[in-house]
Amino acid sequence: MRVFAGRDHNTGNAKSMDQEVKIRRATASDANLLAALGAATMYETYFETDDPQDMSKYIVDNFNPPSVKAELEDKNNTFFLAEINGKIIGYAKLREGQPVEAVKDKNALELHRLYVLEKMTRHGIGEILMRKCLEEAKSNGFDALWLSVFDLNVRAQKFYEKLGFTQVGETDFFYGEKPFNCFVLMKSV
Image (cartoon, rainbow, N blue to C red; front, side, top):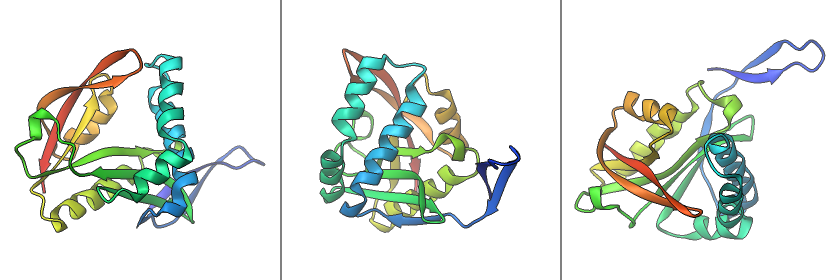
């Protein structure tokens, strides 16, 4: 797959590289890198819509290395990292045991996070991560994969719809001083 790699510092021209995207399971030793990637992708995704103070508090509280390491060590979580040339460019987090009302009676696994660095979007990285998550759900005996997506994140909604997810409900995501409305989407595996 040809992936955009940035600009050549000498010519300013776009560079590309023919590199295979590798997906691997994250371990506790990835905590620092995953914390940095999580903070960067969260900021890239929401800096235009979120209150800066609320976002910075959320990032500091959730993407610090000790918190991320604890998430990595939690047996209910599974993280997959997408990398090219040994560089992490995206990740997905699967989480068991915390269903929202719309899916509580379903045998479904939650896709809690799926983020790709902005400069690497639109190259199929998200789809590759999603395929791995769907495979993981199926191989662990789940019937479906579910997720929640911010109602103002239209780009993500279109991505999930393209992959066959359908809306099954709504939920609130508490962040800062106010709740955000999220759509609950699900797909059979």
